[in-house]
Image 1 (cartoon, helix red, strand yellow):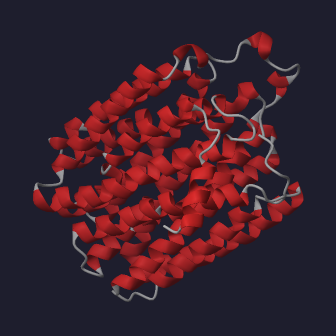
Image 2 (cartoon, one colour; image 1 turned 180 degrees about the vertical axis):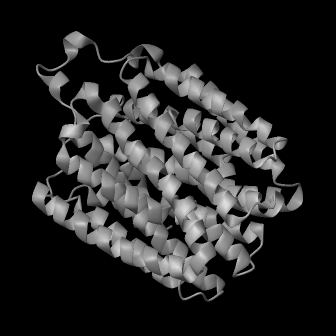
Image 3 (spheres, helix red, strand yellow; image 1 turned 45 degrees about the vertical axis):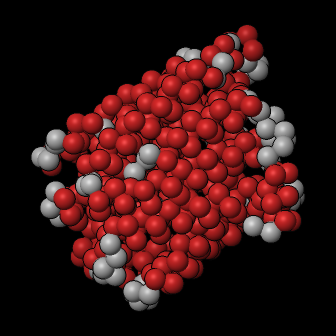
Length: 407
């Protein structure tokens, strides 16, 4: 890392709350052990001998659980202490992974994955509201970016470690490590995050007329959510179909696939915070969401060439990572720029639901399409859909006015 880049990275961390660092630390531990989703499609098709269609249904159940859990989590977050939601979500979701050591029946595995995702993703709205509570307007985007940095640093380590675990001692140990990391993350939040600062917004603190506001009356935000769902459906091919594609068509081993997935996380760690620190000073930050979608189109263009060159897979990983860096932090900040304080849980829940829909569509439709028409056809579709999303996001934020983030 060059000296200017290192200085820029250190500067971008200044002024962040110590409690945001606690949340980031817990996420680092949790995501370092989080290997299940990265390898689930491979585990189902290679260990349990499920068809790609069956694997897609199981992964779709994960997405359905994510939708239900996100909505429930947002509802609870607006009404209960956020600290409790964070701790119990991590603790229970970790314990729900352990039965996967023994379950092989398709319906049992599908049901368990659904309930695991439901509990795990009830964490998302609460975590986002906690980050917002411990941030100022000036530090909010960087606080969310720090959370993503911690998540992606863990994800950079986790899949690489998971690939080695799968090759050396077996897939099932992935579930054990993931469960332990969730329990450890729950303990850190319970021990070091102040519970009394995470109570729900009291009624007397609400703004006059705020109760009349609702996400469903915000038509611009609803269009934004639709585009987020489509963006996620393309992006999550990284976990849904790409590992199977690398294994079946390119004949990569699990450890190589793990290294490529880990590279995604490590690139985010190195690049995202300095990039966001510079870009957030722009007067039109929302345009970078469109640039991210365009980078995703470039990434999938490389895959439908269907050439098993490792350097090409690395370049794909770079462009899909760039898409993530440019789009996701500003998407999150846009969500928090819309509602008043007591509606943050609702907005965050609906935003998480959009990603839950993507978690359903990515494996169920993606793997089914690949099974019927081939992986190259799937990635051609992802390329042109990414281009369409780029254009619609651009037009949407031109209409809004590309305002500076203010929340």
